[in-house]
Length: 293
Image (tube, rainbow, N blue to C red; front, side, top):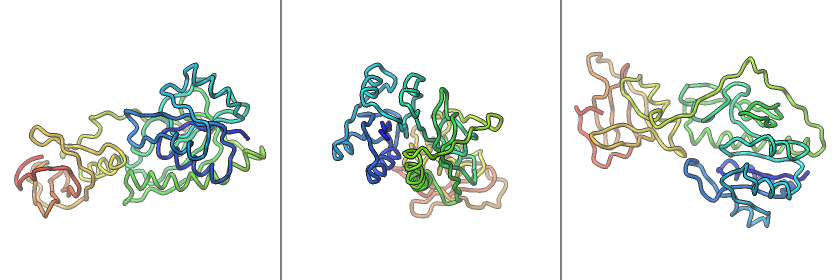
C-alpha cells in the first residue's frame, strides 16, 4: 500500500514516525516550511531527510504544482493528519483508496475548529480520537477507527494533546494491517447527531473576572502551552496567564477582579462566584493587593 502523507504539526510528526517504525510504504510527504497560525507547527522535511523519503513543501495543498507532485507519487491512499485547510475534491479522490483524515472528537459530534481547545473550555468529560475517510466539507466521511478517552480535571491543552497522540498511535498500529489487507470496515456518520464548532478569535482568549472561577480556569487550561495562552488586561499591557487554581471566597460584597492576596508569585483574584489563583503568568512587575485586574 503506497501512502502519501500530508501534515505540518507535532501530531503529524509522531504519526509519521510511527509509520516509519512499522515499515509502511511512505512514497512521499507534503508539509510546510513555515506557518503563521499553527502553534504546534512542525516541518516534516527534516524527518523525511533522515528517512530519505521524497518531500514536497507547499502553502497550498490544492495548487496545480502540489497536485501534480502527489499524482506523480502514484499513491494508493493519502493520509492527511494535521493540515488546517480543506482538501478539494480532485485531490481527495485521486488515490484509489481515497484520503484518510483525522479529527480528535467524538464524530459525528463536534466537527469543526479547535477540537482540543473547546472540550477543555466547555468542561467536557470525554472525547475521542477519530480516523475517517474524507469527503468534501469538514469531518464528514465514514469512520475507520474511533477510540473514546476521558478528559480529567487535571488535564490541560498539553496533556490532552499528548493523550490524543498516545491513543492515535495505538489506532494506527491496529488499522494499518487492515488497510493493507482490505479487511477494514467503515461506519457512516449520522448527520442528525452533528454540530460544528466555530473558529476562535483573540477575544475568546480574554480573561474577564466577571465570569465564574471554573469558566476562567477552563479557559486558561484550554489554551495553555502548546497554544497561545489566555490573557488579561492590566493597565496598558496584555498579560498572559498559563495556569490557575479555583479557590474560595466567602465574602459576597467584593467586586470581581480585585486582588485579594499575593503569595510569592501567585495572585488570588476575586471572580463572580468565588476566587481564582493565578499560578503561572507573565507579570514583569507584580501588581498589589487591592488593585483590580
